[in-house]
Image 1 (cartoon, one colour):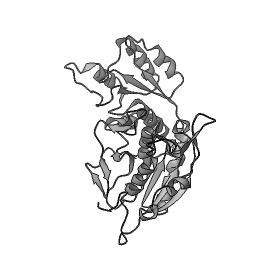
Image 2: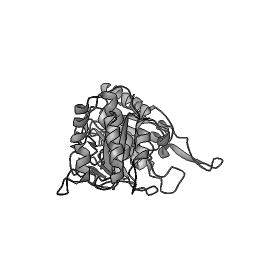
Image 3: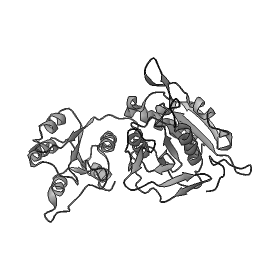
Image 4: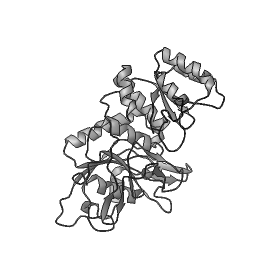
Length: 338
């Protein structure tokens, strides 16, 4: 896709795409406040767009300020509101959408949007690691890249993606892998593509797409981390408070033997458990050992497989799934192949 210029500006013969920017805040909207001693949300979505040179040659950009807070302050209900704004914009005929958001929870909320928004038009999440008051601020370039990508609806059937530091990631497997670097996002499977001066290059198509239709969240899910020598007491306690649990096992999906009774008790009470592991890459093992392995035994007992999802993403998915259905077979189907 050749569209020329440092930011990929369109030439006069190219149809200008119509892109909606939904601004929610985050570092990209921050400036340093000396009285506070840190960044505070100061810039609006309009301010950000006005900072992009010749932005009108990138797209016909329309901005809506949804929120202006750090992403750590966003709740899953807030993201459903953003999802609804995306739906409205797509129904209004926009070619693509950009959501500016803080990087702290960008990966998780991108995944949540991807499984609650049924579209193949690009919905691109982006942000910044360094605000405009700092040397090396990266927000404006990330935003320009995201607008370019959001305007490519006729070139790529992307759906929801993350676009940071010139790379395009699938929300299923993208993670924030560094707390300070501008190259803060990565994927065990690699990026879907890259944004270069003048063109967008796609390496692979997004295949792990799933849709859970629901309008509201009604269930509570908590995360329990398996400990070396753990006895499962925390899992039992959490099962009394939560509608579902995420169990973070040892890679590739084991837990301490002392937790088995607590797992069996929790399942017998009708509280679903999704098993993930704590490694930074790889898929949950479902029977590597000759005897099936402890992880296979857990899955055979009724624990649901979390695949390659992180605990945080699996939690959001189980919240969505339980709000959609209580049927055990339907829950297993939602998790089995994704």
